[in-house]
Amino acid sequence: MTTVLVVDDQAMVREGFSALLAAQDGIEVVGVAADGVAAVTQAAALRPDVVLMDIRMPRMDGIEATRRIVEQSPPGSVHVLVLTTFDLDDYVVEALRAGASGFLLKDADAQQLTEAVRVVARGDALLAPAVTKRLIATYLETSQTPVPRSAELEQQLTPRELEVLSLIAEGLTNQEIAGRLYLAEPTVKSHVSHVLAKCGLRDRAQAVILAYESGLVRPGG
Image 1 (cartoon, rainbow, N blue to C red):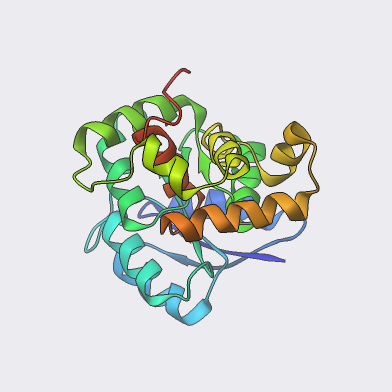
Image 2: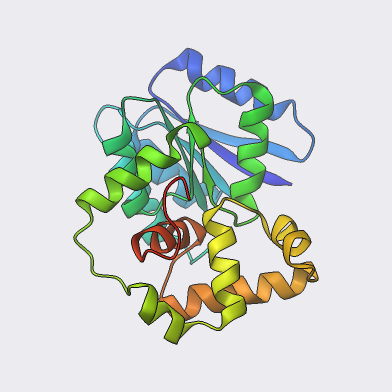
């Protein structure tokens, strides 16, 4: 059972997302919050697997709430799925830096929302295709954190790990990577873990950014 905390300052949105998710098999909505302060408190008390997080809210926005929730939780225990719109790319970048595991457009339908929750709950990054290219471009323009270039990555990672990182950047899940490389899924999971550990990455979302920022893969390439 995947547990979810729904955070949005609009009551109708909270109730709508909660109802949609509660109707799905294997998903339980354990709480709701109307702002970032309540979200941090609820996340600490309820320990949900996924926090569905709005960005613009009173008292504390979703970016700061994401940062605090990730900081107060054991590594990998909670995944924040940020709801965004086309005109909020700057906020999406900041949410990524704060520790968000995925991004979904607010106009997503019930199937897309449900699948997004399941994707991030199992530890995969979720970047909505409609915003991924702009997200990457914006991040590269604004990032001030030095990261290894592709030549340094080649020294850090094995050829197979580089392949896996490239496919993570394409948005493929472990199962899809396994199919592409003709490997067992547990083997892929092991490679992913090695990539994250060797590169000092928190999760797959950071791995996606590293792959682009290092030049290993290129937007549209």
